[in-house]
Amino acid sequence: MSLFNKKTFLAELIDRTEIITSNTRSFFRLDHEQLNYKPASDKWSISEIYQHLNSINRVYNSNILQKVSSAPDSNIAYCKSGWMGDWVYEKLMPRPDGTVYKINSPKNFRSVSGACDAFDMLNEFIEQQNVMHDILTNISTKNLNRNKIPFYLSKLLKFRLADTLRFIVAHNERHLMQAYQVMEKTPVVQKG
Image (cartoon, rainbow, N blue to C red; front, side, top):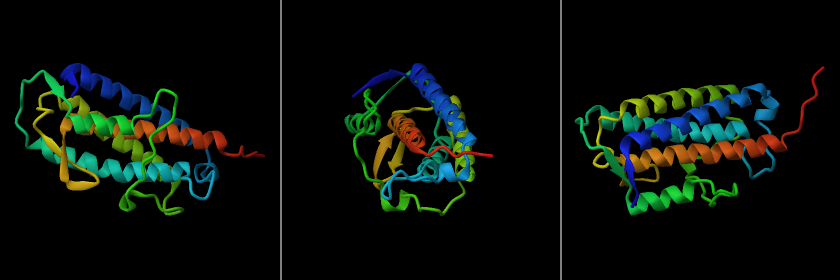
């Protein structure tokens, strides 16, 4: 179990969320063809990556807002993760060498090829990141240890709010890295 100073913990997650949002904006310079390019038939396009992120973030942001809006204030200055929270976080976080632990997405969170507008997906993701930024900015008065959020794979499995916040940020970083890898393989479109 990891123990964190709550103020430092939230500041780090806010910084990481701002970096994710800023880096996502770079995809707006691509066109629809580039955003929908799939490096292989079994790989996601940038648009599909963001479709997946939006489906996860919608659920988590909603669950977190619902939980913390009714939670009493607490002056506890630390937060901690559980052993299972640390384990899941370690699996979600990209490794220092850029590789990731392979995790298959549940069917209800998988992207559907061609089912979305690429720019709509990017815009929605930015909106979801703004919601997460607001949550992280305003949650400092809540107990991040006691409040539990259902895990997206099973409502029976619940994690501490601190763990859930770490998961979301790590999951977004993981897929941002994936989107950049797709962009590197995307053919350059000659205009003009």
